[in-house]
Length: 178
Image (cartoon, rainbow, N blue to C red; front, side, top):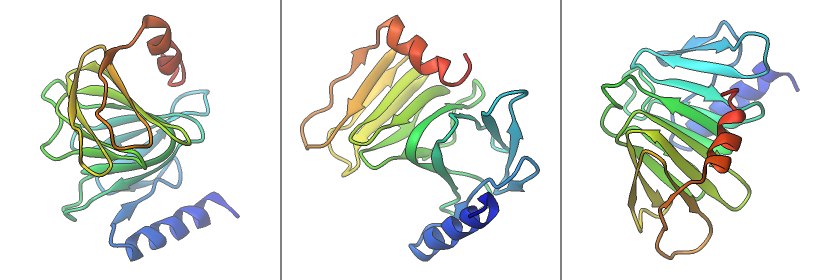
């Protein structure tokens, strides 16, 4: 099945579930206030949006850009697999911007952070600014600051914020070519 057809199929499936989906389908696509560009000579790409959002996408990541209020700008990302490195200009993210995963919701309060989804766990790391993270149910919210990370696995217990060791940060950022 070709990439364009899969993207359209995914968009229709999510739209039918009550979500307005915007799915990048090629290096020339420009939808929902966002444009897709290849990162020179690599298999990674970057999504740039008119609201200042820049997303570096790990190869193989499964994600959907969402425009929940249907104003033509991306206001959330649904991430199903692998990782995204998200950045807003120093002014910070617009109110209400979220990254939604199977295990967690990361509501952005700051400017640069990464979200990584594995089979049973979502990990969030903040490089600059701050991000509020809660279980998918909305329970047990924590706020991460620069250098902080949290792993959200199955269950309903409290979340534990930790300063991530340099080795873990370096391994995550390497996945984005940094």
